[in-house]
Image (cartoon, rainbow, N blue to C red; front, side):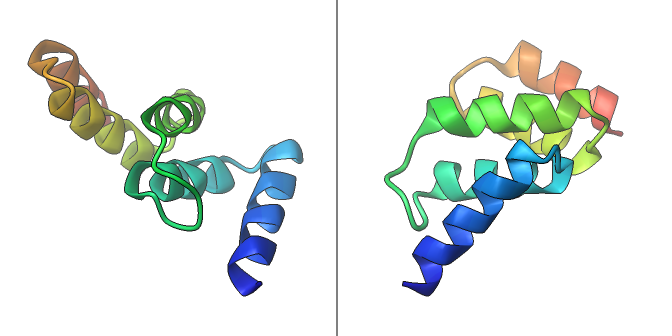
Length: 82
């Protein structure tokens, strides 16, 4: 139940505009913690956090792109994050 509450609070924080919550949710979706693994939602939340200036999210977006076989895009994200 605590995990469900955590998810509920993250989603509420996202609704309120928290960039950190977007980055955290991306990790939850990417790793399949609390919810089923969902690369599409992970990418969505990473993109929003990265566009808002979260460097860790930008780096992780590069990791996601690299995992998906898109090394060129991954390098671009890593260069922006550096």
